[in-house]
Length: 419
Image 1 (cartoon, rainbow, N blue to C red):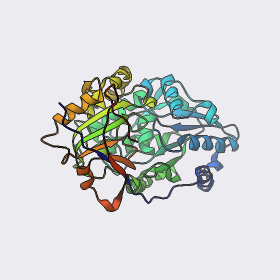
Image 2: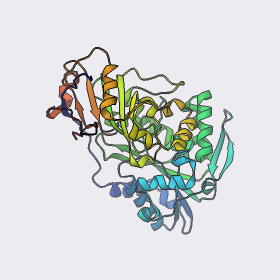
Image 3: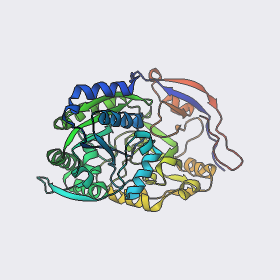
Image 4: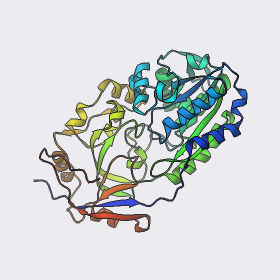
């Protein structure tokens, strides 16, 4: 018999970040002020490199950037710069971008569906650097990415422009090289050296750096010249951290996650949000400490890539049946983290998985258990929390919207959503 589940409150975290109201206008102004267009000649080929994340306003930014470049006379191509994602194939990566709303029709430019690469040199640490042949044939290259904490390492720069270059420009083979050498030299060294060599030898014009708002939207956007990638990303990383929402308490007994996926985080769910990096090479964060994690499902946009499921303790049969094992294996092995592809204890229903979770958190009861329920680690503006969990939160940073609400199941034994 499962211990009684506590009721939950719908809790909203308070945010203060201002968002850009006119993202296309902000991009137009930033590009014009950067001087990038002055280096583009009529008929030149310009490649815009994009990634695999569900970044707010990403299709809008890519579409508008394409139009700006075409207005300057350039022929634009879109390059999926995402390493081994999309099953590590050109068509797979094009399909992944479709799920994010980036298609030839939506952005007005063809998307590269080949994966041919060449070595362009070696860094001072001896790391071979590969680049897609489309980049080698281009007259100019721009890239657009979000700056934020990375899920696999710590450093002065993490997810952003330099990391996209180091992992994405060499496609699947280049991503594997970067991760292998990062184990030897550290991520900071591998990324900065590889990105630096690309800046020296490829016609990179600029990067579009974006920062998310705490509850979605775009809080900041700027055009960064290639010689300023490292310094600018270090500065923007601090801004991104100030904007990011975290779980509003440091000790949680049971965390329910509705969905994980590549569109949410490179590791399915943000590792630093849940306090589990899941790698042999980097220590876990000191907080939060979560005793048990139950993941209920995969997003549609992840196309079966379930990397990160190994960070959970329990899951459902419906999630496991959606896994593309080949894509998950490739991504997990390429990232040097096979642990993140391990499948946790699997149950037929939410009720059974929750039974196992409640049985293994310790001697808690409905009055004392700190239970938190989230949609995904990218949606922390609103969450569900038990009375004991709410009692551990800083009430000046959150508000109770509704509750207490009973946690209930449908006739099939699955949770009835309370969102």
